[in-house]
Image 1 (tube, protein in one colour):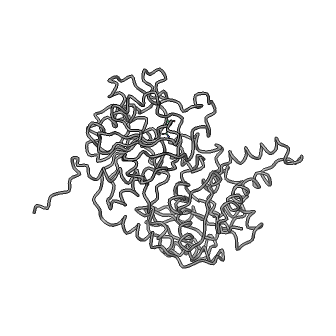
Image 2 (image 1 turned 30 degrees about the horizontal axis):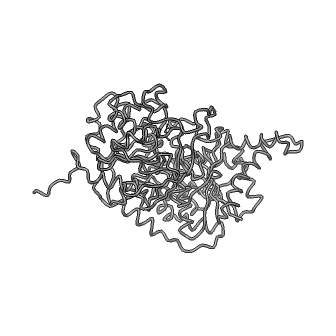
Image 3 (image 1 turned 180 degrees about the vertical axis):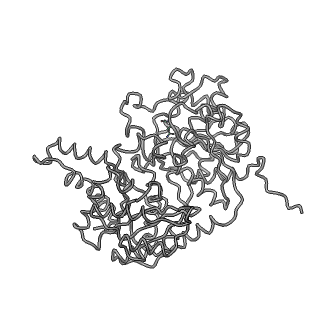
Length: 543
Ligand code: GLN
């Protein structure tokens, strides 16, 4: 049986709970303890796949095709595990299962209630992960903030666990925020005290409190939190804001979190080996020349929408011992202005995933600029559609080329519905989702990047390259450098006459890891760093 760490959040959302969970998992892994992770989201959507990127940020796709919370990306990157659909449960999913069981008569005449039926289903969601993973420790993050009305059944479920499996097997961690008052120049603990009081009123006494803050946390403040919240002095962990999230495991280790957790849970563990993390952080901190990358999307106001893309770029620049100078270019701004003005300094252009027609013409402009100016280009899913549309407009000599997602009457539908998608009316969970094999064509840039024949990559789309135009476009210099094993689906395209213009129908960003960048991102940055644009030349050593 696994032991459990339940992590709740206090005071404000977006406090860094997901990264704290991921980093705690990394500390356990560094001690030879096996870890799995679950994110419980109290909202009522069955999964985040139907939520606007502006409200939810990125939808992270797992190997087995679940559309999940972006925190799963942090978990995979920090802990180095591939998680499955069961690693993310929402109120929507939990209540749906309870109601399906009720309709099937599985409750044998009982009146269905939050306690025990909903709470049992919640517990089932993480017990299943424990059974399937066999992990020594399952870390369970409860989304939202203590006090949210939707969160109460989740807090009740985790409360019951300590009774059921005993003190040594359950740990409660509360991640909270200490606001800073400029007038008195001090960090305030009162909101944390209130949050812990609320948690206690529901029967959960935290064992560890992780205090997030934008300022260093003095010992006196830690003492105050310890006294008022009734946790041991060494169990108040300071987590001030750091410049790079990959520093968090080291900060938490320095604060003693790893040792504290294994002691409190009475786990036999090895000494921590954090050399990998130390190495990574040393490399991040060392001063390096930046590569200028432009990310052209339409949700750029909310950077979390492209979280995994941003991380994958960071992993790739580190591989090349470079820094990144990332500019976020709104594709609608490109529609209004000149591509040259907004992209002049870019040594590489990324067009990431997205849905709907808004901003598409701006992305097409970016692809045209990359092709004509021979700037490295990486297209991710929608970015492939955009690259193919732009190239086909150039080859066929007409602007009436499109994806049927944006213009159902276009003369040249170079991107069209995947087989079977046209008749689907249900929105949630109905795209082509999860990992599929892709055969990489020898002698291409894609093959050079991957160095192997078959790769498995994660998808999330309804539209694909239309084979009716494959011959004509191939003749004009487009290479279908990745294909489904049967050869009938185009999964990667690249341009023959270009230094590096490669797009994929899948989302490679989900598989990139800090110590192991994704091959396509790695080679994209490799090409970008060699690109000379205005402002990218190193200054000459002239006195
Ligand atoms: N909107 C496109 C499709 O559904 C691309 C999706 C994406 O970028 N993930 O096929």
